[in-house]
Image 1: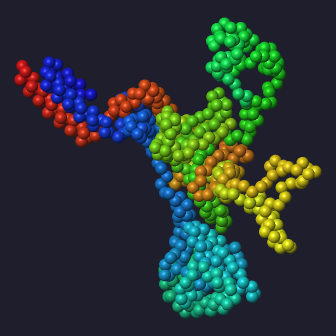
Image 2: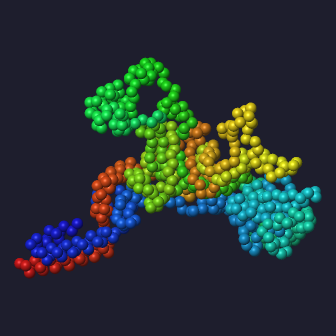
Image 3: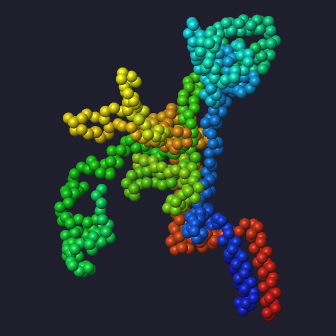
Length: 254
Length: 378
């Protein structure tokens, strides 16, 4: 190890010899306190640490094994541990980015003041034809890409409930017909199924909203343009075919 | 297989036999008393039958008979069709979600995550009796690993893994270099895979839940007997016994369940995920084995070649590393046997920068002093 001083040491001199011995002692102590040693010898030996098996009672070294770094594969090529602990959320983000590039759908059901809430009357337009479905929102099930809303309405005096996946391509648009006056104090308004609380058909609200909207469209051109600017979308594009027509139409309020 | 005695055991047995009243019979006497034992048989156990009484002598390959339809070779051949060509990977079930298709289809899917999946061992027909690849997953603290396994990983040049599993492959073409990482791109989108995992444990469950028995009526004079299994079998005329395999209450779940032919919807190397269509048995966080579907044709040859090429590109020196690790293991093993391991631990010590400086200073001082002393002595 330190061969040079050893060679220089005059053999006859006891004092300096003893000093050398003392110096050696320092080295040996520091060696023993070193927790993990890396082998110095040739480059042939792969890089590793040691795990020591120590006898609990006598505190003496029982054995030791080479431990290769867990973040390395063969000869130093990195083995990266998986980045996110929750890849499901990452997958949700990936898909939402693709299916809702403007973020309008996300914004409509975000936990904000402006967003749609439980108790509001919503109107969902479906791409696969059929009448748009309106109803009171009974619950919002937030689950990333799988987020869905439950709407309840009466069709021909029969209570009808429908779940809509808000990011689904078949859902062409969701509009807020009427907001609830006061914030609901429940997350799920299942009590609205009971006759006492049942709202009945929301057709009246929808027709009133349509009427006001028509008025709004014909008279207040400026207002409509304003709305378009805010959402980055125009409601009129909904009925057009082709690539642009397939885009999401989500109009919040009026 | 019938228990056989090792030669050492056979020797012990001969000592016990009351051949002679004396305590130590001479070797010659022993030899004569077992003269009918052929030395050939002693190697694998012992037999007192003459060699010609063995019926196997009639069924030699040289006698022109067809290959036997039973036995290890025949079994491997029989199973070749249903054994995947390639090894699989280990993953963790991260949960279920939906995959929204561009046409508006919603597909329920399961997210499986691969964490540092490495090949650990190749099992061969010659050494182990079949072809398989042992694969490791994740990382385990060495303090939670026993000494035998620490030695095992040491010899492979791999850090201790959280899980180890074996994947049978059809032949030697399916074997992989040891220590390489298998990423999600080991599979391709649209490929069919079999996913194996342990189902959720339900604990001790009754007949109704466990086997779907109907139970008993709620009324019509029924008293305190609604969910029992009822009769366990016919009476005296049929033997007054419960037939083997009778479905009864007991531990439910926590069994290996294979879901076959699941299509892969998505692979992502960066997130380390494989997304399969549909559900997979077991709770979130359970370990899952994914392998090419055995009931579908194997992946196309070009794809297999491409994945093998990728492995080579990513880990060009895997074999070299394994060889070095093996040599190092032998060296350390010898040291452990000779109780020299402490020397090796200290021998390869490298000082940190500070320590090196301190040492240099100490040596320099010492050198000056010793020089002065030399002069004094002179």
